[in-house]
Structure formats: structure tokens, C-alpha cells
Image (cartoon, rainbow, N blue to C red; front, side):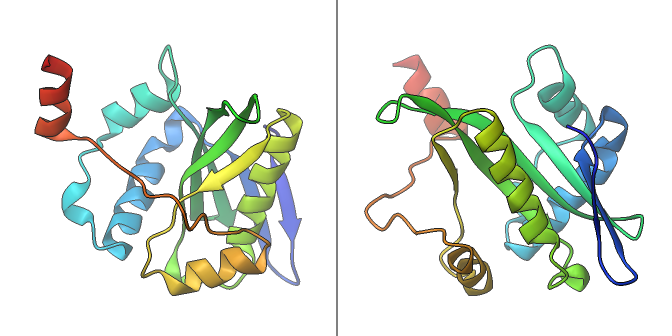
Length: 169
């Protein structure tokens, strides 16, 4: 992905694919996101784990970092999934985080716009993500972009011992 430069009045926003050298920045942003979502105790990612997962032999996801006036301001981590009903891949946004003091400057919208373009370029049928029920500012923002909540769906997750137990059955 080429760098995207988005210029405002006196501010400069740059979006670009994260590099392996930026893993420490990504981990910092992930920890800040977890703190915002009140989930800090769930972060087990390390720089080594992220390096392997994002830049190893078989990357599981990709990341975009936004820089605002040369400051790491935000990130989006995404991967391709597949819709059997549509018969095409989709983009799934795993996490989007904008540092609180930089919200309201169009950074989140620029990241979502970039991901929408990636979805179109890859001929995807969908662009999806999840949001915590209590995160009203994010829900309002997503709806303002035309995103629709999927009211009839509930996310299920297996992890830790439950995941291991099922794998052993």
C-alpha cells in the first residue's frame, strides 16, 4: 500500500502500511486501545508475537498506521475473511484505535475510507467490524458513515482452556 497523504489546514495526516520496525508502535497503540476498552488484562501480545503474526512467513493480518503531524496517531488492524453467501472475500477490521487527544480530526474516517478502498480493490463483497455495545461515540460515528449494525447476530468466542478442551474432544 502506498502512503496516503491527507492534508488539512496546518496539519498533515499520513496513512501507511505498518512495517516490522513499527511493531513497538503497534503494541503501544494496542495497549492504549485495551485500556480504553477496559480490557488491559487481556493483552498478551508481545513484540515477538506481533512480528510473527503480522510479518512472518504466513501473516494473519495487516496493519495501517496513521501519523498526524509525524506523531503515531492511530492504527487499523484487518484481515481478509470470506462470505459463503456472497461468494467473495471480505475485509474484517479487527481493531481501529485513534488516540483520544487526536479524535475528531478525521483520522478514524480516513482509516475507514482507506480500508473501504482496499475492499473495493480486492473485489470484496463486505467490510465488517465489531464494536462494544457501550461505545456510543463509535456507534454513532459508524452509523454516520452508513454502516448498519447486524442486530440478529451474536459473536461467540472460544479461548484459553475452553478452546483447548474443544480441540481435544
